Each structure stands twice: as structure tokens, then as C-alpha cells.
Image 1 (cartoon, rainbow, N blue to C red):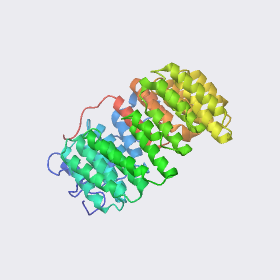
Image 2: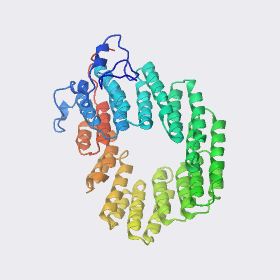
Image 3: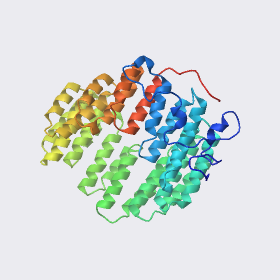
Image 4: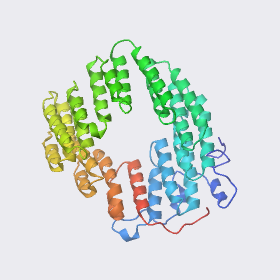
Length: 451
């Protein structure tokens, strides 16, 4: 890893080659304000009222400024890299500079575990521009693994790097996954070892289904060897939810071994949501059998939204059952939260009823939560209506996700309208990503800079 003046590329893996046209851009000092991008335009932002003046360069510049202030280091690096990939299409030099800045942001994460994860995430994006550069970043991230103190974290990082290598067709991916499995087996705490083995099993699904099943079976044995009680049952519940995607029968067999009510409810809840849409009726029957009332409501509500387009009749049945169960919950706070989930369950089959049910929730916070869920469901289908619902939410913390979900649909038809909505999003990451979506919808300017 390069050393020296902070923010200056000196040949490390996060810096692209110095030779060739535009190579001098890589020795610019790193700036948290993304100086190279700010030079794209002279104005700080573009007014939504001046829609005709919106340009891709302006919106990308604003997105970059906001991304540079995202509190989470790994999220900041990833969003900056995503913006850079779009910027590369019209301004190669500025795009390369921002991509290097994204890499430096990832390397700024102080903990080796988080730094390695951020670096592999950025490398996946760099590969779209420069595969050799991405390879160097992944090599540097791999070198950090031995410095990570916990086996479970080492396993996770190796798994993610292996998947990144596999995307490029690298033979190194198999060796990395093998080492990830070795590290997973070295996790001391049995419950955490189960989770680590499960994660590596998931990574093997496409490349080696047999190895994936063997690791899953090993995770099951590890979980079942735990002393009888909540920890064992929760571990088995987690595995049952995981395996439902591969085999409903195996999942049900595992759930049948669970005795602790909360763990069984959790397992059934997760299994319901993993059922394919064509088996909606069976999933609904399973959801109704969940012992815990609150989990039964959330499972039925989530199922209703998931199958509304494929099986509207089942969706109605699930929404009705969710509302009936929610109303019977004794604890007031839990009942209001459950009623909010049950109200939103109607969004897929009867949006007016969903809003009416949300209005009946006595707790104002949970009523807003219901409206947020309704807006989230409607956003890709009717973004204008979803915006209206989201803007009526009184608590801004519950507005960010619904408003952000409306941006793709709005941007495709009216970027200026989408820009005005994006200005209301308080979350820096969500707002930066919304602006990136809007920029992509705007016409490309004539390319500048070197290739």
C-alpha cells in the first residue's frame, strides 16, 4: 500500500498507471470535496425551477459533493465509485480521478475488516473501467486478511473477495473460497461458526453445488450439536430460512426439530417469505400457523405484498388475516406496529383501503410507518402517487426510503421533477444515489478528456 503524503497516489493499488494520456491527474492531492469533480461546473447546484438548465455534469457534481460527506466510509467509497463510472462516459479524466478518490476513501477505513470489505466493493466497480487496476486492489485487500483478528471476519472477507474474483473468471476464486471455509471452521463460538459455514455455502452455490450442500450439512450438524435451548433453536431456524430457497422440504424438516416458540416463529416467518410466488397459497397456510402473533402478522403482510400481482386472491386473504391477528394483540405498542404492517399489506390489491387502514392506526409514528410502506410498494408502479403519500408523512426519518424509491420512475419521465423530490431526501447516501439516477436519465454531453 502506498505511503507518503495523504491523498496522493504513489504507485499503490488504488492508483492507476502513471503512463499514458491524462496520467498526471493521478498525482492530484485527494480532496474530501472531490476537487476534480467540482471543476465540472461553476455552480454549486441547479434549481429545480430552472429545469431546462439541468445537465448531467451539474447533477453528477452535486452527487459527488454529497457522497463525499456520507458518514459511513465503505458506503462513501462505493457511492463515489458508482458516480465515477457514469462520469467516465463524458469526462474521462474527472471520472478516473473520482474513481481513485473512491479507492482512497475505502483505504481510509481504520479497521482492517471494514477496509478490506470496502476495497473489494470498490474493486468490483473499478473492474468495469480497468480490470488490471481492480486486480491490484483485490490483491491488496487479500493481504489485509491475515491482520484481521477474528476467524469469522476473515472468512467473510475471503468469501467476498472470492466472489469478486469469480466475477472476472479468475481461477483464484476457488482457492479463496477453500480458505474461507477453513477459516469458518476455526470460529470458536459454535453459533457464529454455523453462520460462517452458511455464508461460505451460499458462495459455493453457483460454482460447486455439491460443496455448497456439504458445507450446509456441516452447518446443520454444528447447530444440532449445540445444547438444547434457545441458542440451538435460533441457529437451526436461521439455517431453515436459508435452505428454503434450495429445498422447502429440507427447511420444513429442520423447523420440525425446533421446540422454542420464538425460534420456531422466526423460522416459519423467514420460510414463508422464501416460498416461490406460484406456491403462494401454501405459504399463506404456513404463515397462519406461526405461533407468535406479531411475527404472524408481519409474515402475512409481507406475503400479501410479495404475491399481490401473481396471486391477488391469496394477497387479500393474507391481508385480512394480518389485520384480524394484529387487532387481537394485547400489548398496545406491539398492536399498533402490527396494525401498521397489516394496513400496508393492502397496498398491492387495494391502495385506497391500505391508506384508510393506515389512518386508523392510533399511534402517529406507526401510522406514518404504514404510509411509508405503502409508498415504497407504489413507488415503481405509480411514483407520483407514492411521492404524494410520502410527502404527507410527518416524520422525516420515515420519508427518505419512500422518496428515494420514487426517483427512478420520476427520472425516466421528468428529471426536473425527480430532482425536486431528491432535494427533500435527508439521508446523504440516499440523496447521492438519487442524484446519480437522475444524472443517468439526462442526455450525455460531448466526451472530454483522455481515454
